[in-house]
Length: 223
Image: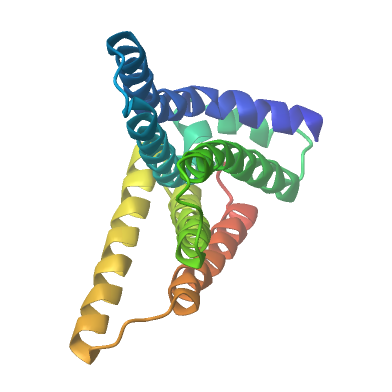
């Protein structure tokens, strides 16, 4: 299992590096603003800087959520793209172990990046004296379920396609369609769904797509 985990990490490390660079861009800008504030002696720079840290953390958090689509889309299709799937098919490794390893690495990477940026955002909130309310916590929880949907849909398409980018793009497209459908239904019925309902609308399709993709991979004849 350690070998599989290491293999899947190497498969995703370039993707993780790209996610980290994109998410780190706002931090570089905020760091530069902090230096300018210190040099110029701006009295309000601390408050502005903390607000910038908060915004950067939120941007990084949602960038991590978007990255879940690419992690799921790269799960199986990435190996077909680089033709390592054919080599793996000849190894005496059960497919359920392969799927488990990919799930652990994919979710491990997402949770590590998401947690890091969320902690930064919370630091900005708390240090500025704004504090956290229930809505902030609910948005954070909803972001995890949206990530689960993106990962699972990308996982499903990755089990069927040979292109990681197409799998990720279809996952993002499915999320946009679902969000548009929820908004349209809410406007037509003049009803605003609660946080629990929103979470279910993302997590239930995620569960279906994840298991459908896993079953397709387990019973697939070709690698």
